[in-house]
Length: 401
Image (tube, rainbow, N blue to C red):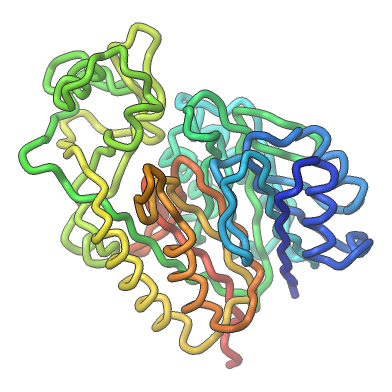
């Protein structure tokens, strides 16, 4: 039976921070029986030092993780330049697979390769946790590759990495390796565990601002409405094509309308994609998922009331799913733009409290989250890839038969 614990630290020294996290999670000097250590860090840390210190403290553990613009723990949110949080897992009913060199063109192949390695390492996997590169990936194709090995019934949940909102580079960790093009899979095979899921985004379409995707190559959008895609998108925003993608991130969410059945399951009319990278000639852009030619997309805008109302509805649905059970662990993938916009900054503590207290009450549950660029999250009975969402993944014990 797998056991989970978590810890966090805002110490500025990377070695001190990871040791503090591990001590908080497992007890001082008690890392010897840890099998898996999941690490989320902000960009200011020295990743090589961090991973080396993790190896010293948890010599037998597989260490994985990624960067984000902030981390979330049971203690709340930290977006400090050097923030760190971990989830430690004890028990043998898991396996880890890693592949490097991920990009938008080979996402299916690397997803499948990693899934095959995972399947060979551990029988009985019933859920898969995933962390991938955030800037050059087709998340939907990664899912396709995994499902070709495990089938569509095994839930896939997790996040893509991020940086500090600059869209210049995001990092993934696997033991001593630090890469910008990684995919990490964790297969959980504990038959007593069940995954519950809550997901919602807080964006609404700008009336009348739609485009047709008229030319693509893999996850690269070459044309919108028959025109070069990036200049066309920027022109509708009143911006120049020289606008850095990082400056446009908060206002360039593209929504694809869902079927009525999926809208009900998602509690949103659209699923969102985010332009995360622009071609060198500034004529096209890349999404972290493929979009077929002929698809109509709507320009979306963040709506604070919709964000908070949606979280309340999401938590009500989760409460019903949990049926009185408390989580043994919560994994969490979130969007850096969600929260209350005040003082020219998005403040996130309030919205995180609106999730943690309903799930955990006065108890403290192991909790690990990251502010990444996109999320892997299931709804409507299908594994999906999204952007701009809050995605919660509570693990609970199955009810006894």
